[in-house]
Length: 277
Image 1: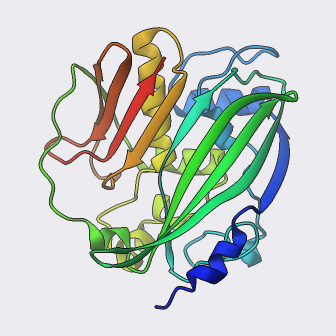
Image 2: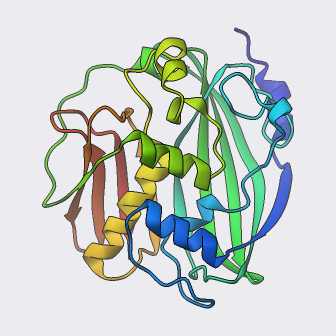
């Protein structure tokens, strides 16, 4: 499939903005979904990455593609490759988000690049999000989105088993957790909740664990181990995880930073991350 990179690069510099209140109800559902304790009274600090559940695009059902994603075009460039995934990104935390605050997300397309992968062309779109809390900048996020012609399932290659970290936390990634996180983030991508679609149409062995969910769990582990939220958090998705087996969060504290990763028992690194304080 031909990709007109010159045309797609016209989207660089495009912006959009949206606003949503961080309600006590959302904070309560976020904490419940991730089995965390925390306050939900106005003014109380919320855990890192709750902003991923806020100000998400609300495309009409008639505007969704067969995979459950919004159809191409609009704010994001109309990349003709059929499969889209969140490949990685970085967060810079400036101030916490608080229950009862008004959260604004201002987004801008930073770059569009075309590369050749083992299974065909890959188009990378980099987006910057500035998250403000009651008008004050709170989080700067750089998001890397990858579009591919083949499914990620078809492009997975053998990799050595992941090492075991000094700190480990077991996660049971069942269908209910994935469905609830999809609902929190208003994510219609069917690979996370529609098993027949995920297995027969995209060739996965089960439902796919969200990249943002893995990033959130790792960021929370980093905060729990250090007793304070990180100042910066970088991550990259390397291979998928599925709901038919649990997985572990791993961490090694390097002093100035912390290395973190996810992996199922005996499997390769799925997501790799680094936290800084």
